[in-house]
Length: 590
Image (tube, rainbow, N blue to C red; front, side, top):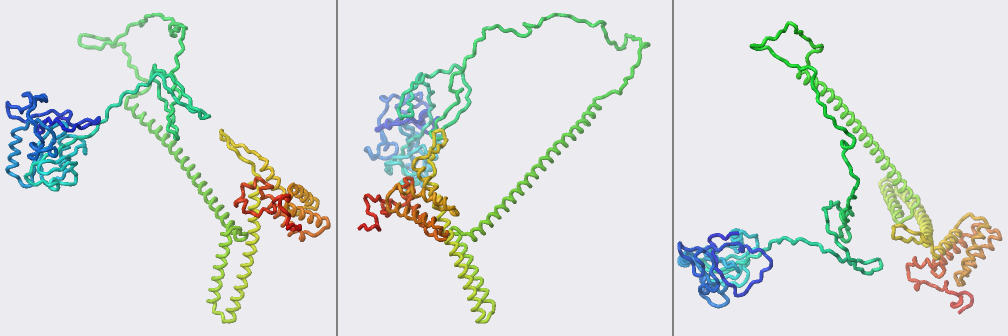
């Protein structure tokens, strides 16, 4: 940047040095320009316009001399300044001080630490932000890089001037004279130095055992520019990997020691031959001074008419039209096939979609019918109760609006109440049946979960199925429970199942196992006596429930510990304690 002619160098040595970071100052390239009359130079400067040394400078002056303030002391001093001031500027300042133009103040702007200054006439109503924008535009520096601070003279403000206030808000009046420091601070990007890779690199690598190892990698300088073939980036840690050809050194070409020649050198023999026509021919036209005998001339007529360029152009146009017709027909047929194919696919898709919607509607209808005929969940029974209530309200409204007499209306209401009671009884029966089915399904799912083998994930992504002793024990107990619940077994099959259950529970001696053995012996005795199946219903249900308690006890089935929802200490464990430490109830023990 080059300083405008109305800015002058003040060469103010700062009393408090300011540390500048790496920044490109807007005034570093400005050239001091002196405003002086013809043949004169300010004191402290050379006649050629250069700066005089510091030891040859004139008298010192503070900012009070610049700003027109006579108050001495450090509070109003910007610095000891050998300040050459132009006489014309001083005269204009005197005119301003004397005239006191309404609404205008005289401001001495000084750029520190470079020491460039200028006096401007500024409206007292101007905001600090407006003044800063005009100065930034005049100095050709970036926006918001100029700071106005330390107002001195008629008013003292020892801090950064706020942008939202005007000169009048700061206390200046028309005709006053003041000084303002300007600080320029902005940064420019410096070109980065070229990176030079060292000959060896030390890399710290952590192995699978967690041990850290230092590996020295020797860097091979590239002898030729290799092509960049890309790579990939790890999304977890952000590490970028290049393809192998970009990383490894280029392969050296094998030296071919055999001598090779071109084909012409190996198999081709060159010969030079010159040719000449058998008879020289020429054409001579008659002209003045040349006579040509035409008595033996013969006029030859072409067997075909002459084919001119116009005929060729017409023929080409005709053939082009034929080719164009065939090409357009081919394109049209291809387009028609494509449209027919798209239409058939669209129709097929619509047919499949309609079939899918119909199938979903049928399944939905079937599911709704099933949930009303055989309800299982709480939502199913809620639907039944809502439909029953809606039917009852509809029937009650119909009876009320039918116009029956009192006897007929009461009879219809009694009939409605009877039907409602029957329907409620039916719903209760379905609820009991659903409760039994849901309980059996829940028990079956729980036993299958106990008996399922363990699934272990491997490092290669595969899974391994493992049967542990606990899962094998749970599988055997589940099979015995399923055998106890099987209906329509023969006497021998039932006795075989009961014998296996008895052997299983007799491994443990406690109140629960003794009760199970007692029930098994009682059922076997009744089977041997030939009692009917109805007499076994309650006995078999009790036996199945006790054996289920046996399966769910972790003392007999360790795998059941993972399925305990309540702490084991809160259960009544008197039936599962060994009889050697706990007295047996019901056998006379206190």
